[in-house]
Image (cartoon, rainbow, N blue to C red; front, top):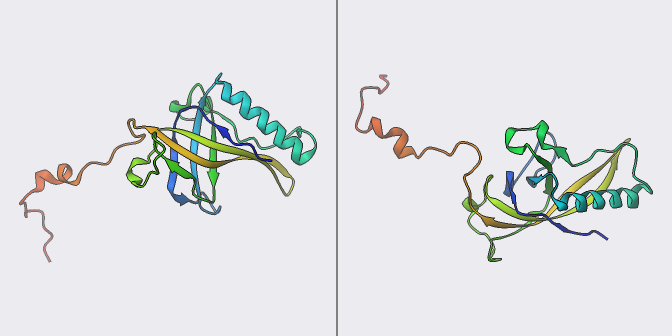
Length: 172
C-alpha cells in the first residue's frame, strides 16, 4: 500500500503543473523540483519511506540504487543547505490554493511560489538498475513570492522608445 507524504512548505522550482514537459526522450510529465532544508524532519520520514519501498520491492535495501534525493550543495546557489528531489506524474496532480479552491488560472502557478505537496514513493528496476522515484499526487499553492528567473519585460516598456519611429524600417 502506497503512503502519501505531505511535504513542508517549499518554494517550488522547475514547476510544470499546468502542461506536462518531456526531458530528453522521456514521455511528458507534470513535475516540480522540491527543495527541503537539511535537518527538516520530513527528510527522515522520506528516507524511511524510501527504505520501506526498497524492502518491499527487493526484500532488502540494495547496496546500490538510484536515489531520488540530491544534495543541493552540489547544485545551484538557491539550493544550498537543502536536499532536493523531483516529484513527477504522467497524470496532472490535483491543484488547489491556500483555501482549498481549485486553481484555474495557469498564471498563478510558477517557479518561486510557495507550495505544499502530496507525494508517494515507489521502487523500480530497469535492466540491471534499481532505483526509487517520487510521484507527485496533489499540490497546494500557499502563497506568492518573487518568481525564479528573469521576469519578462512588458512589450510596452521594451518598445516605448520606438513609438512613431519609421527611420529603421527596412527598404525593399
